[in-house]
Amino acid sequence: MRSIFDITISELETLLVSENFKKYNATQVFEGIYKKQVNSFSEINNISKELKIYLEENFKIDKLEVLEKLESSDTIKYLLLIDNASIECVLMKHNYGNSLCISTQVGCNMGCAFCESGTLKKIRNLSVSEIVLQVITIEKINNIKLDNIVIMGIGEPFDNYDNLIKAIDIFTTNKGMNIGSRRITVSTCGLVPKIKSFALLKTQVNLAISLHASNDKIRNKLMPINKLYNIKEVMEAIDYYIDKTNRKVTIEYILLDGINDSLDNARELANLVKGKLVYVNLIPYNATSHSEFKRCDKEKIDRFYKELITLNVNAIVRREMGKGIKGACGQLRASYEKKDI
Ligand code: SAH
Image (cartoon, rainbow, N blue to C red; front, top):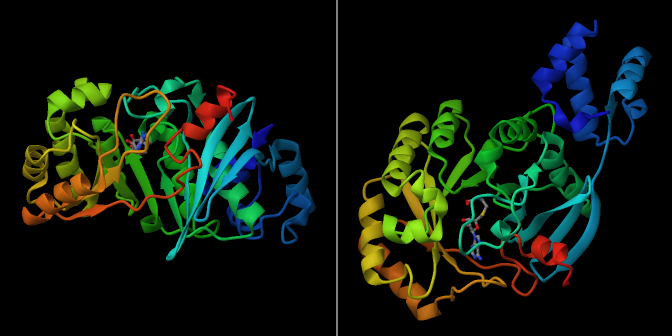
């Protein structure tokens, strides 16, 4: 049976009208499911008995089960069960509110050398409801409203583009969850055609690009996707996105000791982003189980950061969260699947 969390409001309107219900019934259902967060259709008291029966026969109000939970002072990492697989999401408590980092795929095929998620290949895309239910589940069990959603968990969001766009539609529908687009961020490793499609949607959703290198030689080694879409093409896609949306883009750059952290790299990076409406987010590397990479010490991070600032690049060093609880992307799931937690 289909999950009610799989369907956007406009799809539900079309469906209900085709079943001889009224278009506004979709709004009532969305308000019941997302605002009141009912557990059964019978609890939606402003709809007809016929509609309740129709919904009960055709949709389920499902939920995700928590398999594991790891907690630190500022972060709770959850492993959720979906259909014989597991996915991660991470609740981060900032002083400005609660953010949830959610996954879009089971595993990932992008194979970035520094990333734990890539050690477990993609098994499948998450469905729309599996993306949406991460948010609902965490809100329900913590009795909170999330302030921000970051789509940077396991998987490449733009490799599951259609489901991602529908999930964002559901998050932002004002009759439903009503999360402001500007409070949602999608991070991609740089799938150029999808960056362009996303630009044309003209949402206010924030876009972050995992660049992680200042030239193709380094990026080819770190991120296999660079062989398909190199830095020049990614930068052009960023220009295109900014041109269409007038929205600032985040450039993510993990600092890896001795690999991409020299002053020359900082200058090269500054050249790449010069004059663009972007800011650079410098990310301290989170060591993973398998990798040959080392984290830069604080001095090197500072040196890189200061060089960017001197060259008039808008930059920040990302505050680290979830240390000691397998905080890096994919670490909890990887350790669970390999059964060593
Ligand atoms: N596939 C998407 C989103 C998932 S990864 C993307 O590539 O952007 C989310 C972010 O975490 C990316 O910037 C990714 O490069 C970064 N990341 C992955 N492994 C990391 C690690 N070990 N330490 C720090 N950041 C990491």
